[in-house]
Length: 132
Image (cartoon, rainbow, N blue to C red; front, side, top):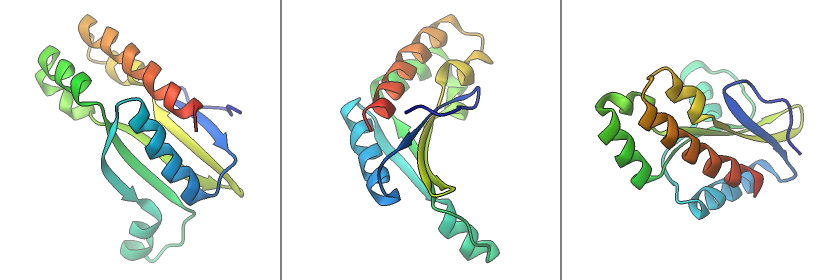
């Protein structure tokens, strides 16, 4: 079931535990050709750095190398907007997975090659989210 998504993201509530959702998200991203370059455990970071309790929240930096290469060829500074962030988090006893919409993020660059590439990447990210 898709829930209300921000204008810059694609979000889905999932019927898994947080750990299961995190594992399943990585698996579904891999099936669409994405590797996870970075993992940020926001909950642990906030607890360690600020001694603040927070619900489970992970940020995954997902990258599809062939598309990343195409993006770099089209716009050398595009690394400022890479990788594609995917979040898995708990809120009100529910688990959500959400991905950035590359068409929105890349729109500020105003490069037609990137716009076409962003649409392709976005379709793959949405497909990954839908299969969780």
